Image (cartoon, rainbow, N blue to C red; front, top):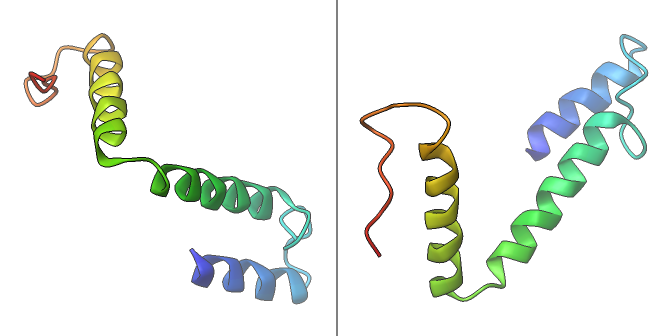
Length: 74
């Protein structure tokens, strides 16, 4: 992720793109939000993380019929 930000920063510096400028652009905002979500999840106890995974599996099961999408029996 940090490498991606460095690449975007260099491309911005060269004037190739301007909408994704580091610090205030779209990409920077997306990566900041992603880091914030990861930090929030890292603070949760393991049991809560498993509950979240099971809920996501239940939501994904309703999207399509895929044999690989199975809800964990917890």
